[in-house]
Image: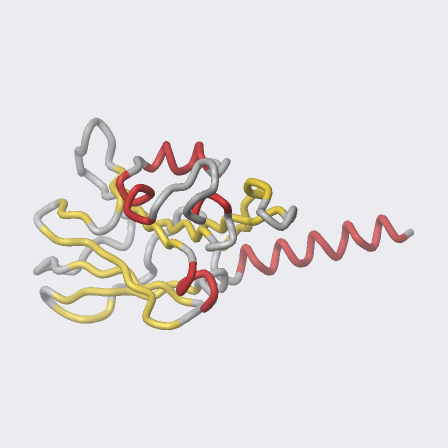
Length: 173
């Protein structure tokens, strides 16, 4: 009976997370220095429902409950964009910030629990075809602690390709 209740409860929690911002908790990361597993968080790919702002200053915010103060201040947040009709090394996927399709694209954490994506296009960016994703790596992961095996600085992580980051943290592409 307990197993059935736990399964139902787990299903309800996962469904609520998916509907409340399309967030997904990743698989356990590498074992931490204190023997605990650290979790890398990542969003699903999503498109904006609407852009705010005006010519040269477009933005949209997305709910990102995994972007806590602890992760933002002590970890690393990486973001990626997939633009319709963009060609970049054989793929349309780019790490942010980036220049593509005649505009600068970037992101910022304007408040904990939210991420804002920006573009300086003159015309309103597409809401369909363009997709965004972020990866949040807590500072408790040994790979972010200098002096530990496999250490990677924030700059090294930003220079890694999307596929390399996914492979390193076991994130489904």
